[in-house]
Amino acid sequence: MKRSEWMRGGLAGLLVVGAALLAACGGGSDGSGTTQVRLVNATVGVSSLDLYASDSLLLSGVGGNAASAYKDASTGNYTIKATNTGSATALSSASPTFEKDVAYTVVTWGLAGATQTFYFPDNEEAPSAGLAKVRLFNTSLDAGALDLYLTASNADLGSATPVVSAISGSRFSGYSEVTAGTYRLRVTATGSKTDVRLDLPSVNLTALDVFTLITQPSQSGMLVHGLQLLQKGAVVASPNTQARVRLVASVAGNGAVTANVGSSSLNVGLPSPSVGSYVLVPAGSQVLSAQVSGTTLAPETQSLVAGGDYTLLAHGALAAPKLTLIADDNRLPSSSTSAKMRLINGVSGQGGLTMAVDFSAVANNVAVGSASDFALVPSNSAARIDVTSGLTGTTLYSSSTTTTNGTATTINILQQGVYTLFMLDGAASPSGALRRER
Image (tube, rainbow, N blue to C red):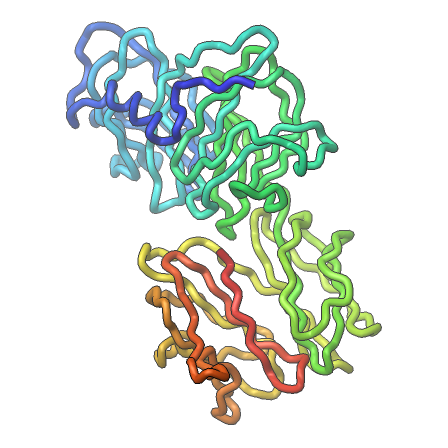
């Protein structure tokens, strides 16, 4: 496998090209020749885009996960802007110099309200005979750095080597050359072979292809969708078909919970109180089934959004347990100096619960079987978290316990962290389990 030098090192590589192409804002044709430009709408939530070049409409009506045809344009310095179709108000912009006899792809990406526009020349040299070139463009900022694997359909990632690795948000990898063929394409969190974020069972790379996989953000922030892009060729949407679900056991009397989503097992005999790990399951309409200490619960049908994360909470009395499905938002906090925190209440008989961080309430009257909204909290290396009962006013959980040597324990809340505090039944008294989701 060979790696090309062009664009190696992520966005820095893109900016090397940009440094040669960037010009002052404004401008327009220099009259020296023509080029060709196309627009790819890789956004999530912008249904149709127009592209302006120095305030003149160049391309119009490009739908989501689609590309326009190439259009001739004069060479020169431009400010290009992507807009909602029919509007002249910029969603995002860039400032290229279009050179003679060079084709360009402009990619607008990101979530609605926070898009960015990049551009690059479509002049990567073709690979050697019998090979294809592959790279990754990570536009899923919440997902963190990603690795890309190409394997046989039944291959275990345990012995596989990534084709490209450690590509963080808004960055390109360099190109890698691979033998042409049909592959199973998997994207994982960097450094992990078990944290799979996208699994495409069949991707065909023909000889001489120059191929880019664009990863796109999902509802949860952790899983990603895919968009396949060929240099001067087709764009193919490859959405994620999976969701992630974890089981949380909070049934009185140490109830042991076994649960399935369709034919996918979440856990077998998970004792209360416990928080299970996320499991990849098929998205769409799925039957949730569970048994608690030998008692079979009535199955429920739920719709799981592709790319979503969910918590399946088993709670209540051992004789009459209940299942509640809760959507998880594991996207990064909006503030780079803060964290996100919420409370999930699995405790019966205590009324609505209140959670305070450093004596400031961040979740109020959270009913049993529900989750609070996420609250932004300041990062703090010595934070205190308390949860009180709405029924009795007593403290059910406090991170500020005292050790045998008289030292008070504290919680380190990290910048850009996402946290869930689970209040759980199952033991002799309610207990708290704090999880850093990312």
